[in-house]
Length: 262
Image (cartoon, rainbow, N blue to C red):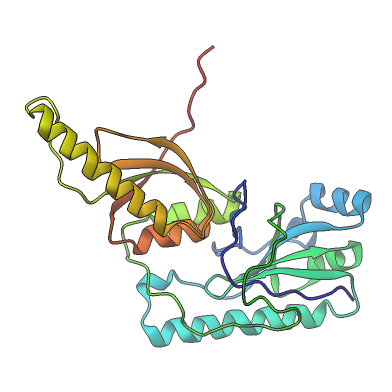
C-alpha cells in the first residue's frame, strides 16, 4: 500500500488545479465506466500511476447557506466518506495528496489497482485528472496523520461568488473571473489630475490588499486595472473561497479568455 500523506494547508502551484476539482455538483455516474475517463485509464496503464481528484457521493450544500451546526454535520459526512474510500483502497497502490474539509472529495495518486477500485466504488461519483503540485510540504503536514478540524473557515458570503463559478472551478481546475473591489470611484473625465492620482492609488491599494489575502491560494493575475476598481484573475477553488469571504470584494463575475491579436 502506498504511503499516506495528508495535506490540509493551502499550497502554491504555477498552474491551478482546481484545486480542487472535487465534484461539488450533484452528478452520479450512470455506469461504472463513466466514472474514470479513458485518458486516466490510459495514463495509469502507461505510467503506472496517475494524479486524480475523486468526487464522493455525499449530499452537499454551499457552506455560505448553512448554519454552523449544519456545516459541522456536512463536514463530518465528508470525512466519513473519505475514510470509507481509503478503507476500500487498502492493499492497493495509492498516495493521499490532499484531503478536503468542506467539499466532498479527495486528491490521490493512484496505480492501476486503485483506479479499478475507484471505478467500482459506490462511494465515488466521478474521477477527474489532477495536476502536479509543489512537492514542498507546508508546516504542520505530518505523514500518516490528519489535522482535520470541524469548522476552520468562516462561512462564505452568499451572492458574492455565483455558485456556477464554484462548480466550474471544481470541474476544470480553474476559472477566469473579474473581481470588483470596494473603493470609492468616479469616472476620471471630470476629475482633476490630483483626484485621478488619488483614485488610482486607492485602486492599487485595494488590489494589493486582495492579493495579500490570496497569498496562500492558487491564483494568477490576468489583468490589473489602473482606472477602475477591479482586477482580473484566474483562480482555483481555494482562491474563490477567499474571494467569497473578503471584505475587499464587491462581486465576482465570469471573465472571458483573452483573444491574442495576430
